[in-house]
Every structure is written in C-alpha cells, then in structure tokens.
Image 1: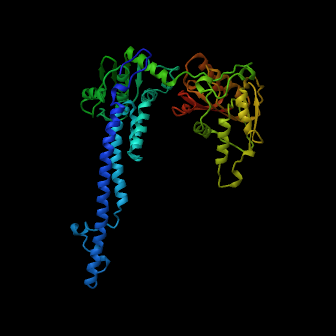
Image 2: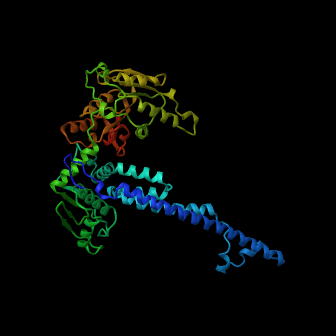
Image 3: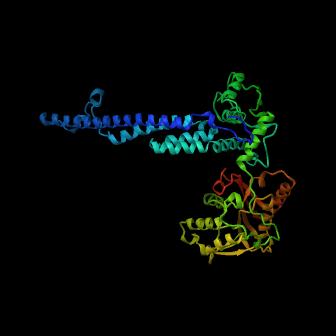
Amino acid sequence: MNMIADDRFRLDDEATSLPSLFTESQRLIAVRDRALAQIASAAKSLENAYSLSTQAVGTIQSVIPGVSDAFRYAHSSDKGYQSLFNDRFDSSLAVEGFRKTVDREIWGALIEATGVTSLMDASALREFRTQIAKDVPEVTADNLRATLETLYGQREEMFLRGLANVFSALDRRFKSHDCFKVGSRIIMERILPYDGGFTGYGDGADRLNDIDRVVRKLLGLPDAPGHLVAMLDRQQGSRWTRKQLYYENNYLRIRIFLNGNAHLYLSDDAQRAVNKSLARFYGDVVPDAAPAGATDTEFYARRINLPSKDLAFYPTPDQTADVFLEGLYLNKGDRILEPSAGTGSLVRALRRKIAATKDYREGYRLFENDFTVDAIEIHPARAEQLRRMEGDFCSVSIGNFLDREALAIYQKVILNPPFHGTNYMDHVRHAYDFLVPGGALLAILPITAAIGETARHAQFHRWLDKAGRYRWKDLEQGSFAASGTMINTTVLQLNKN
C-alpha cells in the first residue's frame, strides 16, 4: 500500500484477490458439503444404534423376571456398558452443531484472507470475531460472494473508521479533526499495567499496537503485528518492576514513564498522513445555515429530495433521535419547542417516547394530549412534510427561528440546529430565551461545541456557566452516518436558572 496523489491509499495489494478467494471458496464449499453428508450419515447411524441398544434391554427383560427399566442404569460404574446408551442423542442437533463448527472455521479463514481484520482496531476486531462466533451463517456460494464483495467494498471505510477509533480513544478531542489534529506529542495515560510489563496483551498494548498498525499502513510499510509492544517488553524485562522505557524508529518515538503514562511522537510524514485520513473520515459538514434576517423564499429553489451531501441537510436518524431524547424528562402539561424541525425527525421521536411511557399507576402514564409541540422550519418543502403531523399535539410554522421574538413560555426545547461554522451557538442561546425558569434544553451539537478552544467557543462556555446547570453526553461515532456524514456529535443538556 502506497500513498498516491490524491492522498488515498491502496488496500487491495495486501490480501488475496477476490477471484482467488471465489475459486478457493468453491473448493471449500464442495469439501464442506461432502463432510456434512458424511456427518449426517454418521449421526443417523448413531441414532439407529442407540435405538437398537434400547431394544436390547427390552430383549433381556423378556427372559429374565424382575429386570426393570432400571437395568439400563444399574451398572453406572462400567463405562463400556454405559457408552451403549444415550437417551438425549438428537441427530439433527448433532449435525447442526457440526455445521456451525465447520462453517465458523471456513468464514474465519476466508475473512482473514481478505485482509479486513488487519484494518480494524482491537476493539472492533474483538466485536467482529464475537459476532462471527455467535451467529454462524451457512457457507453457501451466494452467501460467500455477497459477504466477500461487501467486505472488499468497505475496506477503506473500515480502515478509516478504525483509525478514527484509535485516536478518539486517546483523547476526546480527536473526535473532531477540525478542532484537534494529531500534533507533535500525544499523551497516553495508563499504558503500563500496574504489575509492570505489557506481556503482549491488555488495553495499553492494544492501544499502542493499534497506533503502530495504522501508521504503518498509511506510510506503506509492511505489517508487523505486535512489534512495537514486543520492543518495549524486551526493555521492560521483569513484569513486576516498572522501568522508564524509550523506543524510536523512523516514524515514531515513545517514552513511557514510571507512572505508566506515555508520550508518543509521530514523524512529520506520519502526522500528515494521520491528519489527512482523519479529515477524510469526518468530512466537512455545511448544513443549512439561515442567518438572522434570511427568509423562507431563499429556500424555495432548494429541492428537498437532493442527496444530503448536495443539499447539506442532515436529518436526525430515528435511532439517534431516540437516544437523544433519553435525556428528556417529560411532565404533563409541558409545552415543547422544536425550532429547527426539518422534516420532523425529533417530533416523531417525541411521539415514540410518549407512546412508550408506562407506569404502574395509570394516572401517571403520558399521552400526546398531555403536551403541545410548536415546530418551526425555514425550508418550505420540509415544513410541508411537517404539516402532516399537525394537529392538537403539534403545530407547524414556516420561518427563520432566529428572527422570532423570544417568549419564555416553554418548559422544554429540543433541537438539532445547523452546524455551519458556529451558527449553532446563536440557535442555542436564542432557544434558551424561550424557556421558563427551570426549563430544560436538549440540543444535538457538533462535538466541537464541547471541546473547541477558539475565542468563540470560550465565550459560549462562559455563557453556559452562567445560564444554568449543564452537561455533555457524546453520541456514538457514526450516529449521523445514515444521513450522509460521519461528523461526531454530542448532546447538550441545559437546565435554565
């Protein structure tokens, strides 16, 4: 794998080619099917044999008075005798158990041959292997072809996701490339376990091996699984006594201190390669950003069915919306504002949350008629979709939320505002003014909102400190992947003073 002009890296030279794998898989399938036929025949023979052994007991009972069914179990000390009987043997279960074992091994061998496992971080690889072991699909030509083609098609994406996981696990700020990039020094905590050396495994070893793996791939160097940790372990010697360790090669150097923490330094080439890859993974997000004074007429020319990357509209996926609203505590009579309603993702999630509310005291169960929701959307076509939900529960209006006069009449505000630049700060601060004292605001924001260090971010954080009690809760990586962006997001939960 070598870096090329457009900064993309080739992954297809590191594994067996697809045609070769398809040829090999055909041979494996033929052998596998023959083995399954043999085991099915063997299992049927065993089933018949156990049936005959039971009949043999009946034969003895017919000629020896007083011999009962207990005769079968009366000689438990004789293993040879007992091996003749197995009441619980089930030929179909035996064949299926053999099938799962064989297919698990075949899937494992073929997937290893694709090279995709070397693209995953340690955590993703453990999860992947656990899933394969738990749910073993049948090895058929169609299943193999579909799976292998999918894995090959996703290899670059898989590598970038693993790279992002590796660096975001080191420092929360790595979850947003535009906020924090890999610099000259990376501080890593708790690299050494309490008893000293790595001994080739453990969280610290996994993190170092992950970094070494992704950097080597980005620089076009051959894989060397576990090499970095092995070099450090060799210096460590006895695992019972911590030492200060140092290792250096042509793309990184690392110093591990007696407290178990480490300072890692990447070469200039390694830094550039990592930062370019992080930027490619997270991408640029430029959602609709209507500044104060913009009117809905400016949005008529924008077709609602354009792809997300063209229209720059990122609706909240259902699962993400449900997770977001887990932090919203509802009370009967709440008036709720949704000031960036889009096509109604959060309003629909709110309905699901209310419908799922159960309490052993019927009087405390929540229903839609216990609430009113005011939804505002500047895009006319999206607002028309919202109007399909209009009724006693929800009212919809078209317009620019930032131009609305703030009336402190809402107990709750929920919003996924535009992320462009720092416009979301204007939306959050304006939405806050609509809350009654003690009201709660929940907002989905880019993770830079929590960890940004610019003057604008510092000003926003100072405002939050005065506004009330608040906390951040990061959403899972890829929470907006279904909407066309890998930007990392967080939830601001703010209670007004």
